[in-house]
Each structure stands twice: as structure tokens, then as C-alpha cells.
Amino acid sequence: MRFLILTLLVALMGCSNLPPPQRTDANPVVHDGKAEKGIEKAIVVIPGALASVQLFAPVLEWDIPDSTVIAYRFPGVDGLELNHRVDIIDSAALIARHLNALEAEEVYLIGYSTGGPIALETARRLRTENVQIAMISSASDSPAAALASLKGALDVIKAMFRAKRPGLEETWAENYRTLLYGRDHFTKEEQAEQSRRLAAMQRGQLTTPPNKMTMAHTADLMTWYLEDPEDLADVRIGFFHGAEDSVFSDDMTRRYARRLHADVFKSYEGQGHLLFVTEPELFDDVRAFFGLS
Image 1 (tube, rainbow, N blue to C red):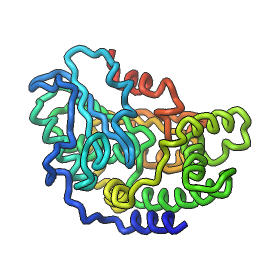
Image 2: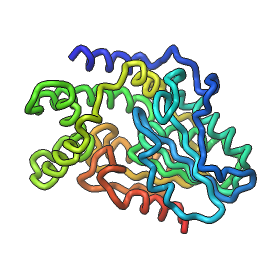
Image 3: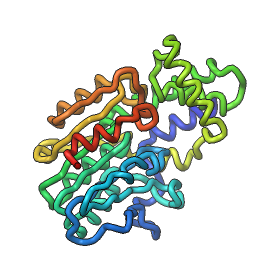
């Protein structure tokens, strides 16, 4: 309980003492070795808080001529030290600088959760006019993240009571089930069994994230607000969202998508926040939206 309260307070502080990504020796931006100046297509993947770029593994299997895959890594994950923070605008500026130097003719941004806002801020800083964004389980702007933190803390408390054995590992496993299929799936026999099975497969890997990492990944999102959405009028935007997402609700995200005049909003019935785990067609849907063959 002390950890839950501390995590919530940390998130609501909305700041971090760590420097932005530009002030670190290791570059958070990596690529597949094909990122050469003048390449036709640049596909950029941006994960969410406490997540690895490995969630985009299917994208690496796309066989698209004259293309490169570029990834933005979060601090403390994917080989990076926990020595800087995720700043929505600064992170976007760093990615945009790399893309502008690359001079790709087409840019395809895929943002998961917190990666969604970073993708939006990246797009408005690009010099190329051919930009598309896929927003997967995307975070909305303030106050959505603060509300998500409050609801998330309550979900963890509920998971603690559902757990059949004491201990944080059991609590995280139960909360993982909520992230998979939402708060109401436990009464549905087939989905409840599926979430139990998937959670069991994660036992031993679900650990308490360090408070410093939680703060570095989430604090800036608490106060970020999308200014001047009309700047993105020429960007093609698609949302891919679980109808039962317990972190960023379907209704709130639809309102957010309308503000952005999104071209597509694909809602996955009965699915939660972890679409990349539960929806096998997710990245095929994203590729189809992009029109990449």
C-alpha cells in the first residue's frame, strides 16, 4: 500500500529531476542499419511507459522496399541507463532531428500509450509533408494521465484483494489481467480463463518498477497538453484502441481523436490496454492503415 501511494504521489508531481534525453551520452534513437540519407520510407516506433521497443517486434518483419525502422528507447529499458527522463516535447524534438537529417520522403510514426503524444509532437516538427501516425492504446493529453494514475492505483488495490496468495507478484499478475481485457472481463468465462493463462505466463517477470523509473517515464505526461492541434491538419492519424482499455478509456480517447480530426478510429471489442499482446491482427491493421505493401 505504501508503494501504491508513493507511486501515485510521484506521478502527480508532474516533474523529474533527471535531465531531458538530449543531455545523455547514449542516444535513445536506434535503427535497423538501413537509415541512410534520402531513404524513401522511415517507420518510427515509440513505446510507452515501462515498455520495451520489443513490443513492436512484428514491425521488424515488415518487408517494405527502401525503408528503415527507427526506434525510440525509454530510459532504463532496452540497454539505456536510467540517467534521463521522457520529456514529451524534448523526446519528440530529438526524434524529429534524426528524421529531418535523414530526409525520408515518407514518415510513418507508431506510438504506443505515452508514445502516442511523442509521435504527435514529432510530426509537427518534421519537414516532410508525407506523415502518418498510428496511435495504439494512446495516452490523451492532460488531465487524462492524472486520472489514469488514480484509476490505476485503484485497480492495483482491487487486484490485491483478488489475488489468491499474498505478495506483490500475485497482485501484479491480477492487475495484468485487467490491463489485458479491462475491468469487467472477469465474469466472462472464456476471457477470464485467457487472462489467467496469460498472466501465469508472465509470473516471474512482473516486478515492481523502481520509483525513479516510474517518475522518469510518466511525470511529464501528467501536465502535457496538445497545443494547436490544427498544426497536424495535414497529418493522417489513425487510432487503434481497446474498447475496454482501463488506462485511457475508449470514450475519452474518441473525444481526443475528434479534436485531432483523426482519419480512423478502430476500436477492438473486449480488449484492454495491452493490444499488442491480445490482438494478433493489430500490426496488420496498422500496416493496412498506412497503405504499406
